[in-house]
Length: 355
Image (tube, rainbow, N blue to C red):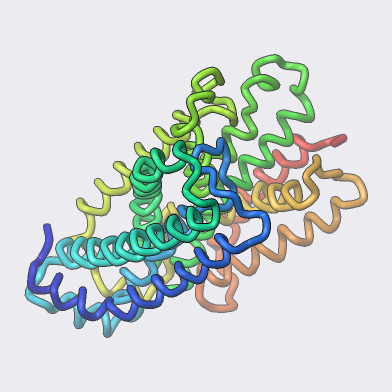
């Protein structure tokens, strides 16, 4: 439910936000269109750098601005005292920010298309016919990630928590799947299902930026119909799209259900949600392996590198634990987090032994 009076007020407040994101978008578009290797090809199977990338990034990080009113207990008390329900407050702010982002994207998209076609002389009729579908699909495919990002950010009790949660959603899940992919390639490369289905690429495509571009590129490319559209990286990646969409609906449901129960008091305490540090910390070993596997583009050797890997895991564990407790203090609950972390660490070692 949207509060019309607060909508008008917050929209005026957000004009500076709208101006900033539009300016950044235009700079991005100009840099992209005037790069030496740029060629407009909206039907590309995997447009790595394209107009929709910044749209998705905005949608993923915008919850930080939407939830700014929960950045401190005093500020939350002020907003919660307004003659508006907490659910309506969140919904109204979310809608205003979505409108701002779509205005910035639409304006910049039009400018970018005009610049790109002026450089190429408006010769490619195929691209011209795909302009509106590309614009529309970019929004449709990007929106589910916004609701998931808003959900995980809302679980944080302060700005630091929210940044960590969003970062984990954007990169952590994909990196963990990357570690799993290396394991599958190391030990089951001869399995025809794993080899042909490209499971590692499927897992990676669940990450929002990758799945967005892969899905749009293939949706506009008739040749993709001949590929494995459910799992293969060269297909439309329907399955990741369906997974992200279902998760977004679940996230939206819990946001709407629980927001009126929100209390400003929780901002003063450590985040205790299962979707936060309690999930991120035990997955540190998988994330570390995923980062290293991505950087080296090859399976990680656990021989001479094992000591360094363990040191990185221990350091990250401690940093995240202290961020979770908001102070440099060791309590019994460190043991409760250390045990599952050690278990996942052992699993990683077993998965990559002899790699």
